[in-house]
Image 1 (cartoon, one colour):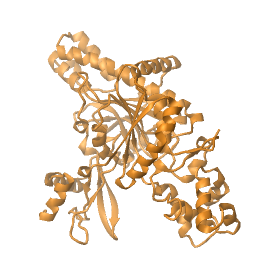
Image 2 (cartoon, one colour):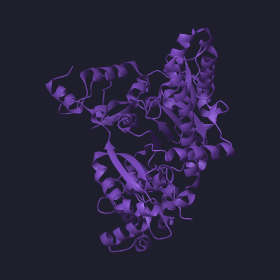
Image 3 (cartoon, rainbow, N blue to C red):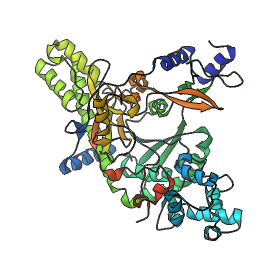
Amino acid sequence: MFNSEDLKLLERKGITPEQVEKQLQSFKDGFPFLELDAAASVGNGVLLPTEDEISEYIRIWENYCNSGHTITKFVPASGAASRMFKDLFGFLDADYSTPASDFEKKFFESIENFAFYNDLNAACLKNEGKDIAALIADGNYKAVVANLLQKEGLNYGAKPKGVLKFHKYDNGNARTPLEEHMAEGALYASSSDSIVNIHFTVSPEHRELFTTLADGSKEMFSQLYGVKYNISFSEQKASTDTIAADKDNNPFRESDGSLLFRPGGHGALIENLNDLTSDIVFIKNIDNVVPDHIKGDTVIYKKVLAGILVSVEEKIFNYLNILDSKNYDRELLNGIAAFLQDKICCRINGLNSMSDEELAKTLYGKLNRPVRVCGMVKNVGEPGGGPFLAYNSDGSISLQILESSQIDMNDSAKQEMFTKGTHFNPVDLVCGLRGYKGDKFNLPDFVDQSTGFISSKSKSGRELKALELPGLWNGAMSNWNTLFVEVPLSTFNPVKTVNDLLREQHQPS
């Protein structure tokens, strides 16, 4: 199937022919839907801490931060901002020159409220000889948009979200998402030596933009918060790219005969996460940030999630040490099983019929895994995944974050579970990456490879099939111990379109 040039390409990428053959088989076989037990809800898989518990979890986390452990914020930031400006690109290409849609009208009516307004005004003066107000007065709306999106102006249409100006401050400064994550890190992820570790995963072509911005911002934020920053970057590994297939499930080849590989989706970042050496890692998307004056809930609930993680890990480590020592009786084993089922929501059939040795081995296998605590917001109709209790290949049931592509929507019962689910996944995770002996888990060992998915794309006018790896917080963490916690909707403020920046949550106080 592979010629000498193919093999050279595979070697450069760090991919074996066997991996490619397995991926091609996935195109033929497809991926199975997951079997669901229920949508998770408060009282059935989703925790809702009381005010007293919130205070206690914050105390636990703050003590942990001062105990010599390493903490990192991990921020997937490789996405370009082009989708943010989809409507404005459409306006540039439209056969009309005056704002017509509600989106276009809102953008221009509120243009002074964007944090990038001053930069855009300067670009218009430089390139057009007129400021924004004059261009609008002349009806030259498209010149304004061109100066925002195109290379001759701010080039926002080609830059990553992380370096765009999102928020204005009363002192006249503006902050990017990268800088807001720096501020957040100082508020809840600073270790006992006042070090704030933040790791961004970026695209190769954007790395310099990020490093320049981070280097230029460190001193200001260090002085502002009294911390020292250790900011690092990585790129999605070429070894996680996946082969593209044609309609007959054969390797898709370019016009020159070479194989076409595509990035494997955010699930590929499990490799980047695995390279970190921290004890605890916070994961949050690049665009879910707010100005300082409404960071309060975010900081509180980040500490709550982390406090829950630390307290649960402590119990798990204690139980694993007991199981390791074999110093237990049936009553103690039953207590550990109750913890696994009631606290972790990992439910296993037939525990009562197992011998002590079988039960201890089963419990050890389920407890000796990475732990994640995931914030969940109440469902307000946002597209995307949610929390479920799902069946695993061994017949057990555990908590999983699932996307619609993993659920058989032709099954009315499962579709109802998905559409009537009470909670939504905002990508708000705190992860424990070390085991009870202090060793770092090898995270790829805990990926459910059967949870990838296939999508239809095109290249040079030809249709192709693309293979996405199991998602970072979906199948890539399928075999982790998971807890879901309800967090307020105020902690979820993503920016999907440029006009989202006009929402109250992204405006100055």
